[in-house]
Image (tube, rainbow, N blue to C red; front, top):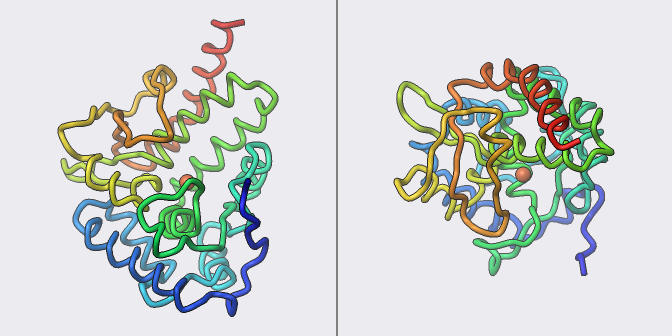
Length: 247
Ligand SMILES: [Fe+2]
């Protein structure tokens, strides 16, 4: 049974343990990430002013993000149903939880908490090309929301970019996917020789399956967020072709 989670962020409800969890995870991830995460993410982390000492206050984050890209956060108690998720994204609102895991759950959680949703996803909402892609994918998803096959294919694009994407920066492989950024295990294995690295290719992504319950085996590499944004027309065309193939 799902635990009942808060539907609004009441900052005074955070406990000393919550602050300790945020600080522990933030410091631990930053130590691993600082040399292997995208410089765009590091820049963005400064823009949203995240630090280890302060659990982000959603109202403050919205005030910082809104004038830059028009994006903001919408608190949800648990992971959103697909339609609601894409509808909010289409309105430039990222749905995020506002609760934190316990000290006993530092390394494994069944559902995303705010360390994943906020630390890993939110900084790049200050990047124009990144959010342009994010909104574009959501707009396409909403057109096909009643077509499970289309949503499955778009889910793969989302998974291999927003959640588990890698980026080539000056011939160095760096991380920008949120599923990697918030996970100690993923940050350690995603750049290793034990996994397969592919260049970003829409049809190859449509052809690649993934599992949510294990460390990833396949990663796709982009050259820039502009490349992602510019791939939106191709995603829509290839999506249509893939759907025709099965109809
Ligand atoms: Fe996520």
